[in-house]
Length: 177
Image (cartoon, rainbow, N blue to C red; front, side, top):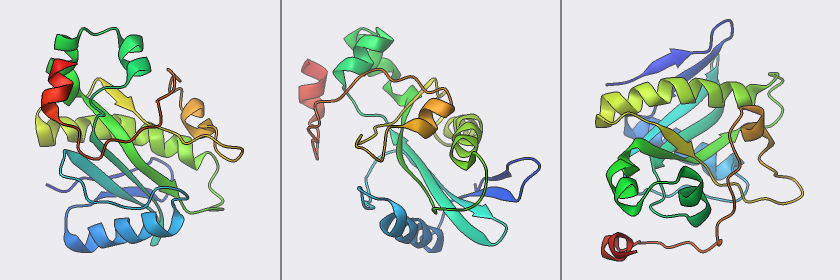
């Protein structure tokens, strides 16, 4: 089931990536415009959208399964290990988000995040059957990136990660931790 929605009073539309042709557009856009993380296929829950302004592809955004364990986030939520295991399907990770530079559209980043928080939660429920109660993201901070677009959309900074990436997290280790 394809979802297509638009931001009211604009030409901005969101088209769900649901076939190989759209996936290639998504992948190529990420590889061209995302400054530090290139596209990778991952075997997990995922919903991706192409963001259009009329006929011009201006961005991509994607949500995937949450990161299983992040100390600062887990302490901020306050869930027990059992609650985290039970509710992890109700969290999603904004694993990709990039926009074409200089679109001339005021507040485009926070507008996109707002729309996807609303419509993305609906789509997550339709596709996977889980109510989306939390969305997370990770920002590689430097002098050019401080997470300003997320802060403008009222996302809450809850801490830092260790910066260690695990390519294939063993579920047995996570369940025991």
